[in-house]
Length: 70
Length: 431
Image 1 (cartoon, rainbow over the protein chains, first blue to last red):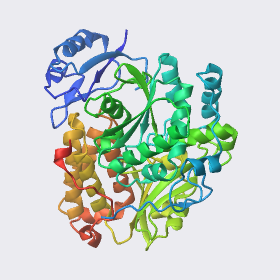
Image 2 (spheres, rainbow over the protein chains, first blue to last red):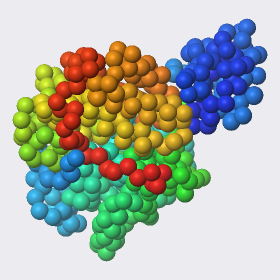
Image 3 (tube, helix red, strand yellow):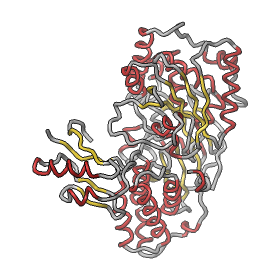
């Protein structure tokens, strides 16, 4: 099922593990906070995306169903 | 810097009438508006009727976001429990005085509205939330509540809660957290269809002006409410106007009144350069765009919204870039400090604006400002950073001529003038 990556910006402290694990979909702004490529996670990256979510020290990264519009 | 005197002038007013002298006590309130008919106990058919009337009225929230009032109510109703009604009197917007004016002049109308909502949702409690730097509001409300109970008005239990009077404390998820005794900071809510909670209860948050309109809709119905305003955005609204005007204060107007007309009512002191619309997270609108009706769809054409009912008139002599910088600086200091893009991004945008206002930046600095706006937009838990981005972008559009000369290193004379804005002193101890 197609999923997208979301960040809870209030929880995120900019550790940057997610960008290290999933550079194809997550960059970092000049202050180190993640900037996520919008849209669904391609099937080929699904496993890596799950790993990025699991390794977030603040549990700020989430995978959500793409059904809603934002 | 200016201060706001809440001197009302009214045009087709419903909430505040021809407001003169002291506010309406209970007797005057009942004489003016008539008694409020409510069912003895919770009645689902009355609740359905009321929510239907609110929906048909087209009433939108008057606190800033402009969300349809009935939808918030239905969301909480669908949750099925006994919720709490949070009355939002925080009014953290420095250029707004309408909510405290309304509470001062027509407090019973606001409390009627809260009671109507509480009955419709079978609420356990009403909590009146006011800022701790305006304790007079709390004292006033306490007196108003005792007046109601002395008159034997049956009521849902009411509590008064003072919360830290900061810009962001009125954001509804921050308010719900504050009432539950947690730090009053916004929460990340990706799914807005999940009702807010405060402690174990569902919570519905409404601005005081919204509730005053509800009190009138419960009395006179949706058809009456829609008799003024536009068909898309019916009713009246309160507006606080300040800046370069002879009579700053609060006015009640039909939604859709042209901005230029509102400015005329307040008496501009000189040539108008632009008007800040909505609030400090709002948008500048240029002097040649002032025919625009004060209504959501029309304002959206200029990237603006009604926001919290704020208009600030900027005279020709002032520098719009400098004033924008001052607002951005204030808003950066008012960040709740949770989200990186807000904490660092707003400070960066304020710095970029300062450099531009000083004429100390070339194209590179301008490009940096544009980039920072793009990087920050939409990346906070709440809309606080988005408001600053919107404000900065509107400044670049409306003051484009000045921006061009500032970029060439020639700042306008106005950039050295003192501010016309209401800017509370920054107190770093208040976070």
